[in-house]
Image 1 (cartoon, rainbow, N blue to C red):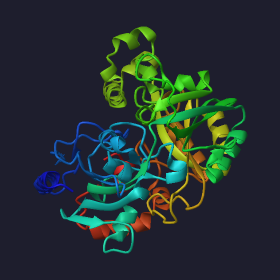
Image 2 (image 1 turned 180 degrees about the horizontal axis):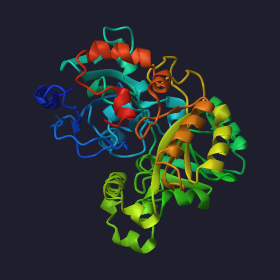
Image 3 (image 1 turned 135 degrees about the vertical axis):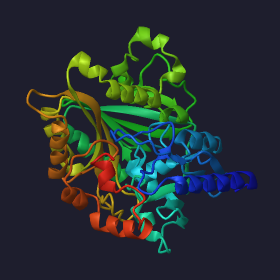
Length: 452
């Protein structure tokens, strides 16, 4: 690590600690940052946020050892920009540019390398955390002094502390990614193919480096198989008039630069930009390319929630924005139920298997077991006589029936006992006692369910 970045980072951590000490006891503690990838509506607070200025940089990239040190607020877009010139990327690059490394570890990230590389926290080698006492402690894999915090930090969402520095593994990549879009008319056939690919890392004799999928209807779904390549052919560009998710239905094969592959979903926020008219050919030409990105759409969603514009136009809507992990063998059952009960299409599919044998108590996926992340993001009409949240509650029940788990970045409705049973309540309580004994930070249930 060079002296300049090290000194600057040291000063940034000191400012963070000073801002933490300045927050009155009993006032909520939150990060002062311009972007967020959370969808929970939370209460308003006039308390100052934590000063995270200076924690967003790449501190050092070591291409020989294939590791990088970054600040906790470093965006994946900035890290990828620093590692790609060395032919390296993080082992898992979440699909939106503004996701931070600290956020992906504390809140769980996922992407198309997850079927072989697991989740982002599994490639963390060292972690500095500002804990509830105001101290910064260093932890990592193994049996060190704070190894319990390392295991419990994923899915803690800032309620045990905030990452100030992460050291992560990197992996070699090639300049381009060749894609194959394989269509299925039955979800059971698709899931059988997923199991084969996860076991063999190949399909029809060709290597598979990246794997995700899209469900357009119960009888039309696709797996997209990505293979790193040096192919010299022309590449597609989905940052302009062309729209990536539409190409899945239109093309059997495609070729993208590795950079464009990693951010293929960001330009249109998967397919959600259509809600703002950004996919209409005329409006798309007028919409500046620099503003066709996920964080801009997210700000529009927050504005719409505050002003309730959509409700005035289309009637009351329930926001259904969720990612759930379902065991592979139960995924057809879940998708069958979803297709007959929830009017949302398309759906994103992202197979995942934990990379190692360790268990992570606050999000207890089973090592060695195959799962499929199912993502769905839209609004649905609130039926006459129904309450806002009814559809989300039905989905939570369906996830539980099929042995799955739900990410906590959006609205949740579990009872306290249900929540503790699903998200390591006993382990979390012990971590809270040790690392936030005065309860300066929010409780995970209060934050995720009661939206404090």
